[in-house]
Length: 295
Ligand code: CUA
View: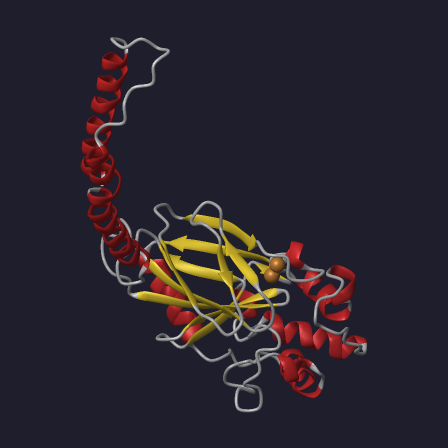
């Protein structure tokens, strides 16, 4: 395209120079006679048509190759990890389909490797954006968009929803944790395990509370209620205690915040889809002990 463009530029500029200097020799008050119609037809129609045709065809071809998921730009190897990302009001469902891992709001990826993201939405349009790693890509219900992401350094990268999606749009955060391959594999292996069995009487009672209260209708704990709840209304909690944050990046994941979140999620993140859970203090402590054990 450049060489074609340069050729056209040189020819046009030569004609402009020719016209400029040849016009000087004529008196200005007499218009020049009309000459060279053939040049107008040739330069204005006959030559541009094939040139623009070739350029159009080539740009259609090259934009097709550079946007398809099979040719990562600047990627050293093809991706071995595919992440399915599903937007919800107001959190992120994260699935590693091949590895059978489901998590939420925190995406682990191996550093220095291209990772394929397939993104869609369960409700309204969201937009996935981790400014340090990639440009925005929309999560559209009923449609799957794809994007390649590669982190060249290890670290925790903060991302957010970049499309207004409701009253907690502002607090629809996520983290990408780029790890060395070995650490990433360890994490995957740990996430593949079904939920840990509760240890101790309090935690065992907490599991009963979890099954008896409303939790179970929206949250899956693999190995416990997956046949009852193929639901994705709320985040999968199988390994909730291994995450850094709660409420899609809104609060740090610790016992106090977890308790606050369960008893008054609307106070922390007004308008989110989780109702408050009223429990007596023993049941409440038991539930916390159980959830804290889901590492
Ligand atoms: Cu989701 Cu804004």
